[in-house]
Length: 233
Ligand SMILES: COc1ccc(-c2nc3ccccc3n2[C@H](C(=O)Nc2c(C)cccc2C)C2CCCCC2)c(OC)c1
Image (cartoon, rainbow, N blue to C red; front, top):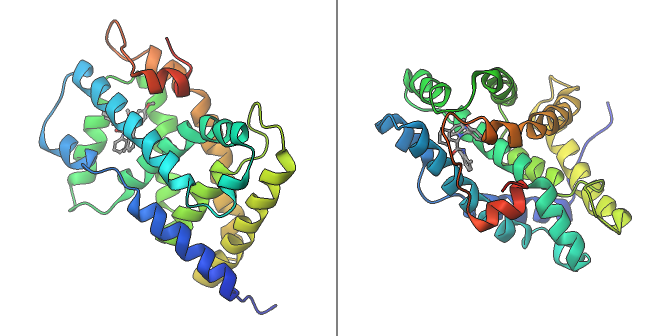
């Protein structure tokens, strides 16, 4: 089997991205909040919009640490952020969902999310995605690189210089591929499975506008930033 080796530059790239990913976490842990109390559909919707708003701000800060991102055309940087924000939010939610909480808490968390106000039809696809991410048992470097690959998707709407984005994405994909081979030697298909989750993620993200519109309450209020990013209101 060919010897896979991560170069010094790739090691440095991975460290920059992983450190930035871990630094730019959302301050309060929503899972703990959800485990503490049961909230009404209105309170949960407010919590969701607060979490999503801070997640977008965290995402902007994170992208500044992706080598080459700030050298992209300015409008393309915005198009990539706008195009990946929902997917990054579901990826982050999946990671929070799968974070090892004391046994029994996962069921409570699952129940709180099920009863949050989201309409029943979206629970199954959302949990299927969370569980398929959980089964991968990604190390934090893989999580950080996967989020970066998602952000650097060349075919987002309104991206002008797709080649420039493709070149950056390929650099990250090469490191991620090697990392997967080194981290999961018994599973040669692991990298392919990981990328397959991005397809599932994109499908889930198509539902998000309906998820919001069908939240069991009237008069859904959004922050100005979310109106920009979520195409709502
Ligand atoms: C668009 O529809 C969604 C999106 C996300 C979730 C979601 N899946 C979660 C998995 C684990 C923990 C919490 C989880 N969330 C919400 C959350 O805040 N996600 C979150 C965000 C938004 C940013 C950063 C980080 C996170 C975790 C809770 C918001 C308050 C009601 C309950 C869900 C969702 O659940 C119904 C519906």
